Length: 149
Image 1 (tube, rainbow, N blue to C red):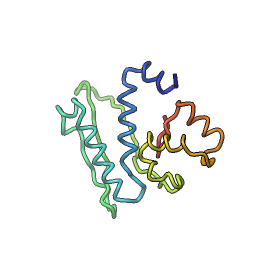
Image 2 (image 1 turned 90 degrees about the vertical axis):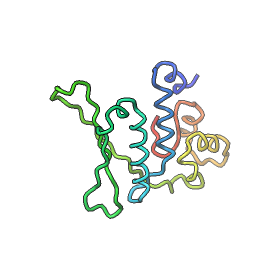
Image 3 (image 1 turned 180 degrees about the vertical axis):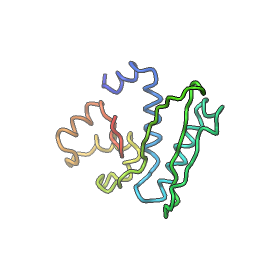
Image 4 (image 1 turned 60 degrees about the vertical axis):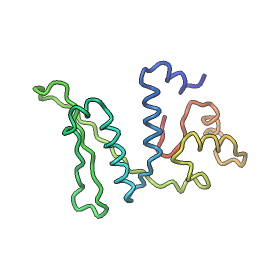
């Protein structure tokens, strides 16, 4: 049994996290392109699926980046437990990603981890070095654009 499969059994939300990871990887968001706008929309839509944000839709905002030539936005979301508390935890992230040209002939698969992994397993040309090939064959890792699982 692979580590990924073991983790799916060990952690109650592992399956959801894996599905969410695949959903995010599938959305291209190459740095410096309008695809970053699409990714912001995807993240906004994902947050809106959460019951908390369905009850508190004003707690999610799209904030335009000042003077941005592409019209990109930041997603700001606030999840509160007790409104009277003054303490807060702030999580920051970015969702732009470098290009996929380094995937070579597999660049179209970079956004589809299962398809990419299947194609890499089938290839015999030595695209991956020995360590990466072992990781792929172990089933312990997910390969794809910006995936580190």
